[in-house]
Amino acid sequence: MSQLEVNKVIPQSGTTLTVGEAGDTVDISNATLTANINASSLTSGTIPDARFPATLPAVDGSLLTNVQVTGGYVIIDPITVTNTDTFALTSSGSPVSPASASNCIVSVNGVVQAPLTSYTISGSNIVFASALSAGSDVIDFITVLGSALNVGTVSDGTIGLAKLSATGTKDATTFLRGDNTFAEAGGGKVLQVIQAVKTDVFIQGSINTWSDVTGLSVSITPSSSSSKVLVMGKCAYSGDDGWYPMIKLVRDSTDIFIGDADGSRTRVTSSSYSHATNAAGTYYGMSDFAYNFLDSPATTSSTTYKIQLRSGAGNNSYINRPAQNDDNQFRTRGASSIIVMEISAW
Image 1 (cartoon, rainbow, N blue to C red):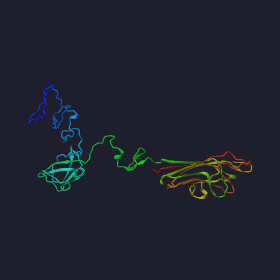
Image 2 (tube, rainbow, N blue to C red):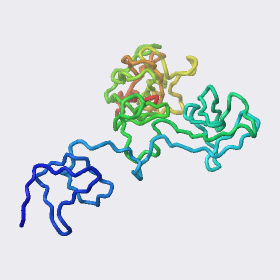
Image 3 (tube, rainbow, N blue to C red):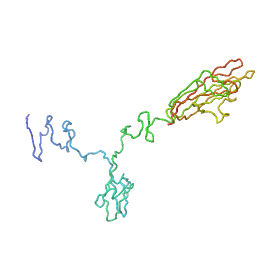
Image 4 (cartoon, one colour):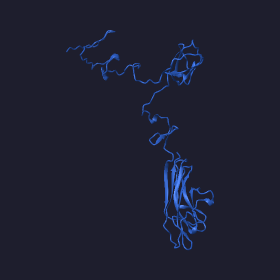
């Protein structure tokens, strides 16, 4: 095998340097390519990656295919000039509405027109500053450049939360609302629940006086002033000698579940009062008063809901205990409760 070592080979301009013949293997593994490469006729796989220089020459892209060009350029259909200043813009017969006059290149009689000065755009029409004349004026061409950053159809899954302009917390617990804000799911969501259960006896012996029922009160601090508070529960009550005690629901010191006047406030009536009598006509028995009330406290301060009881006519009223019977004995106790729920307004 012959071997030839040379320091440099410089072909004369316009000549072709041929190394080897058909069937030969040319090894340039230890060489460094410094000359420009004319890759216009290279076949696939002829130059390994390691042979490319660190910096490649710029490519104008004129021979590239399947590459989307930003802008969405449109060539307007030829326009026949008539004696008017307004002409419709179409492409393949369909109306075209440029974003602005600055998005267009317009040539009339071989002269490129100045946007806004020589013409304006109105929807899918071009309006010239002065009327053109049929027979003497020619619209050479109109090219609509399209809108900047027109990226066409975005691929699925390519836009993350960080790219959205919506305000609010963007995470797995929120959703995007129609007003372009992120918010937690709402519409009646229960934010907190507090309950008090009373199983012992409460006796109200003060005539014509409202008294807080010990153990039937709860305090709640709403998280928002727009929240609603649903109050519900039941009271097991009774009264001596046929006296029907009065019961009401109070928020702090404000009555919130009573009638319009004293005579119509919530109280036990004979039709709902379960009782028995002894020979002397003494009443004994016990009934349940169930209640549900949706309140709007409009505050974020601690708020107390409670049950109050009132006696009259010199007789005692009771919670969780029947009235005394003829043997001075008491029947089985009842149980009472009060529950409050904060309900979000959104």
